[in-house]
Structures are given as structure tokens and as C-alpha cells.
Amino acid sequence: MKPTDAMDPKGLIYEAYQIEDIGPAECRSIFLDWALSLPEGGETADALRHLIARYADAEPDHPMSAVLRDGMASVVAPRRRGGWRSRPRN
Image (cartoon, rainbow, N blue to C red; front, top):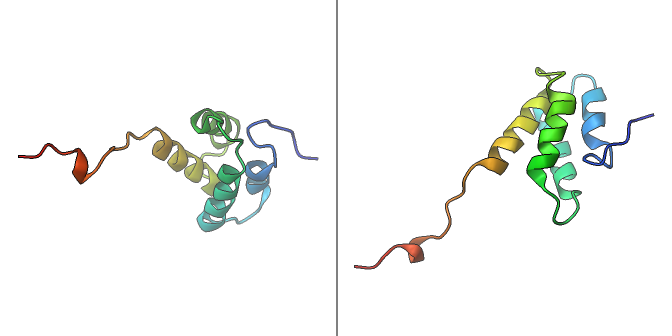
């Protein structure tokens, strides 16, 4: 019986940690499915912090741990806004 977790309602991340010999590609696919299943308006960074504390800290060498940390880095990385139109014209 898998544990219930509000940040992983389908148990996708939990299941990834249970699969023997899972690789990075499979982990990224599971992560994408998890991310797409997040409720609208949910805070992705908070969910990732929770999952990292729950799973990745306990199993730092698991490929899903690297995927979760990469996801966290991309969520909190500042993004450049605007494009060529935002530059002042001479």
C-alpha cells in the first residue's frame, strides 16, 4: 500500500523510487506526468521542496532525486522577460 501524499496524489514519485534499475529518462517521464497532474494554481516549488525532503534526501543517488533537484533549479531560476521589443530604441 502506497502512502498518501497531497504533493504526490497519484503516487507517481513514490512509485518511481520503488522501481529497481529505473533510469534518468524514465524518471524524467514520470516527473513530467507528475508536473502535469498538479492542481491549477498549485505552488510547484513548495511541492518540489516537500518531495525532495521526503524522498531525495533519503536516497541522494537515485535518478529521481537528480530529476527533482533539476526541476527545483528550473522553477526557482530567474527568467528573462521580454524580448527584442523591450529594448529601448535609439
